[in-house]
Length: 414
Picture 1 (cartoon, rainbow, N blue to C red):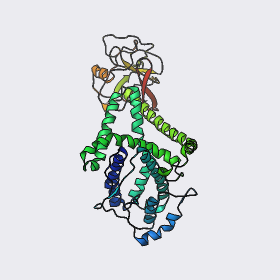
Picture 2 (tube, rainbow, N blue to C red):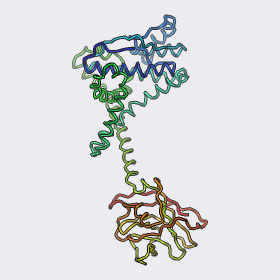
Picture 3 (cartoon, rainbow, N blue to C red):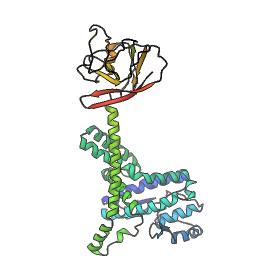
Picture 4 (cartoon, rainbow, N blue to C red):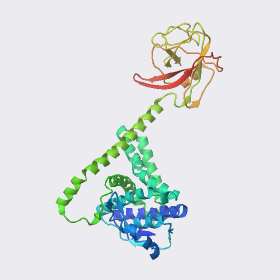
């Protein structure tokens, strides 16, 4: 195992949390189920001499995209040894201590270098056959490739919810972060529960790490010991910043794509939630006689029998309204035929709620069309009338909310 020796800075405490998660959860899982690991840290690894010599050439001559690799030797050696069929084992009764970076800036640079090394090594491993012979390792490596994108969905949605004033969503999301991340760092808290104060920093850093990994993907062929780049002064730093502009732009574009995807999902879910037919399954059987079809048009509805629950009128072709109450109803496009008696079944997804009474219809469609003309109920019967044999016609049942918002679901007329 590996720990930070006497952590006192924020960077050291965050690093100590990550080490516990890695060695107590990740490496234990991979060695137990996958019979492999992604990386044996140089401070903690012990190799047999004969084993190391077999992988020495791959380590010394490692290349990626035609360039020689000069960093990430511990991860490269780990994968090279395993690719030759050697097994690795994790021993948790010995602990190695490391000082860790005390300054957050140095820690972030170190994490960036590690992220680049991980991209290079993981992509090479997934491109080889030996990794796929270890399904748990292959799944873990593939999951690491997607993590930067999926991790950013939550904070982007948080910003979206705050901007729209969806405070319940904000509260639920923050609560989920607090509970889930507390469970995740549970192995670390067992040593000292007072380390719970690092939780906000850990949550923030986990999402910042996702951005770092995306940037590392676009700069993975940039190598070196970032924590030792102290020569050159401000001029060298300015030149490095200018050269990194395309990578910054690519990172920003990737995050923007994730934000667009989150916005799209929110719009789709909002459309589903606003539909009156989302909560319940509405089954309305409207019987239509041969000569007097029960058709209702908001633009041309005439009262036929004020005391009856069923009103009939000849209306515009292609319009059928299912009405509930005196100020609500639902209209849909419809093709009228007068060959024989037929019925129209209107279906929508959700919970089934069907009764043989007008009050049930009024409850099923509580906020349907608010047109002043559409004020007539339609008869509701528990058994359908026989259908004539004809080609089914697919239509839309549309329920309007207010003046501009409309929700539609398809149904079939037989």
